[in-house]
Image 1: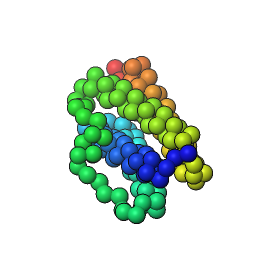
Image 2: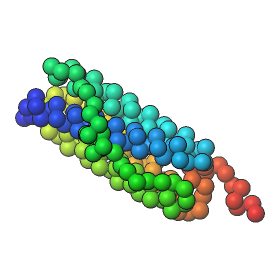
Image 3: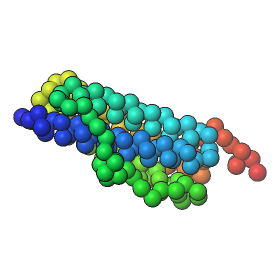
Length: 162
């Protein structure tokens, strides 16, 4: 049985995780020159923003005080030191994103198992499923990149036509 305090702490941690993920994917989208890659990372960033909004709504329903973001906690939630200027940078960023999505999936799965609220459990399961979808997408893109395809641009064959 989870206490109200534990529920709010878990929601707060989830919100900050989503803020960090949003900023990470937004930064990656800004750095990518491939239009397909840029679009995919913007979509994932949008998903993370939507996750945050759902979580904040729950927090605000359960807490006597409205959720407020603090810079200190944002800094702890962010994924840092990623640049995508070279192919190896893209591979490294994908590795970090893959691990982050796997971690997010585990986090939400664990929260769903702990929570007493059926509605909040459903939210956590839904978020775990979405994070798993991101994970699968990123793994596929890494495999495509490793296989010599243009990153996120499976329709492009220009490099094979030389």
